[in-house]
Image 1 (cartoon, each protein chain N blue to C red):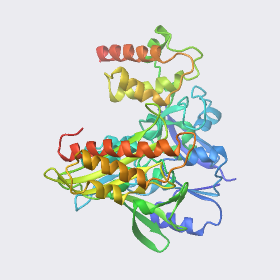
Image 2: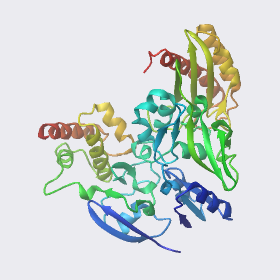
Image 3: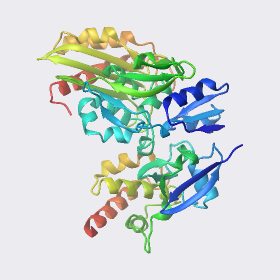
Image 4: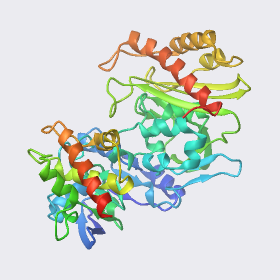
Length: 158
Length: 288
C-alpha cells in the first residue's frame, strides 16, 4: 500500500512522516511522533481523550486522517506547558480535578481552546463545551472548578 | 485504500465515476471515519473534498441567499452572524450534532449524505427550502434537499455525483425558522424526533410554511399537510391543534431503543407546536 508523505507542524515544530492512507492523526501522533500524551479512549469521537487543535480548531484526532493534517498546525498536550505548567494544568492539580488522569490531556486541550474563545465562561458554558470529554472518575465538578479558577487567574494575569 | 485530493468537483466526480470498488467522499469525516473503524465500510477510494477551492467558504449570493461550502464545519456556521440572523433554525440544527470536537469537523453536506433519518441538520434545511448543487460526470444540477435522502444510509445521488454546495434561499422579510429535537438527555444524543419549521408572516397571518420532521420515517419528511394546517392562520390554539394532528398523521415511525411508535407519533405533534411558536416569534422579530 502506498504511504502518504505528510508534512505538518506539531506544537510549533515542523515534522514529517509517512502515513498509511487509513491511519488517523491520533495514531500518527502516538506511533510516528512518540507524542503519547494524546490518548485513545473510544476511537469513535465520543470521549474526547484524543482532543487536539488543528489550525486552532478543537477536534478529535481519532476522527481525522493523518493525511488530512498535511500543511496544518497541530497542537497537542505536549505543547501546553512552557518553562512552567500552564495555569489550567496547575489548577487541575490544585483542585484534584483528575483521578486516573486518562481523560485529562484531552480535557486540558479542550479547556484551553474554550478559554481562548471565551475567557470568562459560565459553569454551563464550560459543561457544554466539555460535553464531548468524558471523565469516569471525577464527576466533573472539580474539573469545572479548576477551569473556572484557571480562567480567573488568566484574566487577572492578562 | 486510495486517498484522493482532487482540486475541483469535476475531478472529484471523474474519480468517483471511474471507481469500481467502494467509494466514500470525505468532508468532516465524523461519520466516515467511525464507519471505517467499525468495519462497516472499507473504502477502496476515499475522495477528500477539502482541497477544492471555496469548500470552506460561506458567501451571500446575488439574490440574498447563502451558498455554503461542503466542508464548512458546524462551529463556523454557528459563528457566522449573517447566516445565524437569516436561518437560525438551520444553524441550531447543525449545532446540535455531536460535541465541540465534532462541531469542529462535521458538515451540513456530510450530515445530509450520511443518510440518517435522525440527522439534526436536515429538517432545518428542508424547512428552509434549501437546495444542493450536485456535480456529476455529466455536469451540474441542483436538487431540493428533501430529494437527497432515499432511506437510512442511502441517497438518491447517482454514481459519480457529489454535492458541491448547499444553497439557502433569501430569507426575505417577516420570516422565521426553528428546529427542536427530543432527546432523553441534555446534550450529545441522537434525535428521537426532530422538527423544523420555516414560515413567513403578513401581519399576524402565516402566508407560507414548510414543516419537516426527522426520525419518524425512513427519511426526513416534508409534511405538506402540517404546513397547510397553519397557513392562513395566526397560529392560534385551533391552528396549533390542527398542526399537531397533521404532524402526527404524517409520521411513519418505527419502535427502537430510542422510542416507540406511539411515543414518536405524539412527540412529533408536541414538537411541531413548540417549533411553530418559536419560528412565529422569530418571524415577528421577537424570538431569540
